[in-house]
Image (cartoon, rainbow, N blue to C red; front, side):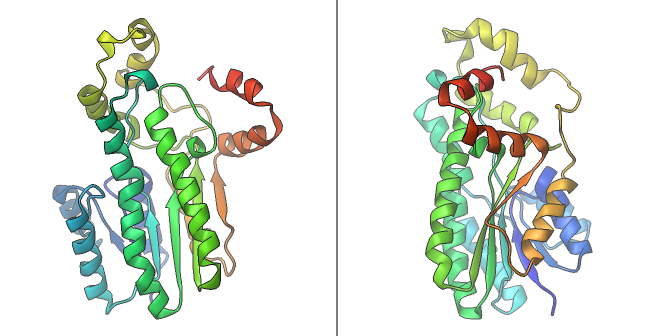
Length: 275
């Protein structure tokens, strides 16, 4: 029988590639997006695409209802991929800005997951894959909102995995490093909305570092891989008879996972401060 999966954040990047890649492997893919115009574009490409906005509980419920109606009440896998970044120094990050990141990167995925679990319990199987990041393992300057949401995702997922040991539901973490996507460009509106960088005591550092990184056209980051690298690992996590608890993607994730275990905290801080 055709296996079904709901993927969030499919307008571009990792989610977009995963949707097309898994469909090519024979999965029935529900490729959700936050904006209806993106959903319409994916439908034109042959995908089923319900609108799902992690910050809107009504859209979460409606999207899952649409999926379950289409499948007859079953769902084999959920891939919580959608997320966004809000760059800026920790001391310049307002509470509501941080809250907006957690709504999309943690609270929304959690709500969707808790709605999917009863479906998977009833059918007797299921896989929940949460997309974390190398920044769920180690930190980086200017990224405290995103980092803290991914650290929280790691803890939430690890706890869920332990709790689900007495069920047939597998819970898995994917931890990509630098991947070709639009996350940097998509973070600009959030930066402009929430960060008053010109009033910051770090204004000169913003000019010298962060603004250039955000606004200047750049080539790929060092060790950057295409989104298909994540899709390849996702497919293994979904299709392996006994999946691993976590999957690293890209060399930096493997390196940082090792260094976090081996280096003293201050030595790792020194390394990470270099950006």
